[in-house]
Image (cartoon, rainbow, N blue to C red; front, top):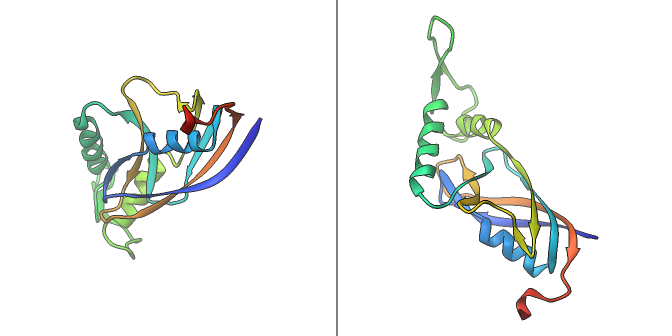
Length: 158
């Protein structure tokens, strides 16, 4: 059994989803791991990690729009009978700042996944996404911790 710690950087295109599946599988293979567990942690408070469908892009679009309706920009309506409009106090980095933090709190910043034969075990229509909650393009860093068995063959030689 061996383990490694590393950091991977990804550039997002602003609010939406970046598919990480292929890059993560390549990382596992380049480090010659056969089977084990990969633990991913986002090192940011305004993006998250999720597993979802990779076949129909409408799924991701619907998720994004749903989250925008649940966590509006600038302000929200109180759930009390008064329906008071409440403006976010934290807005130093723009109108997407506080909503991004709320979206991250409602989702995941870490995933632990099993892999075999150098590939993360996912369902047929699943992929791993970094879900960017900010408007602008961002560089995001994931902490990666792999614990597993090394392969006898180098994947690059197969």
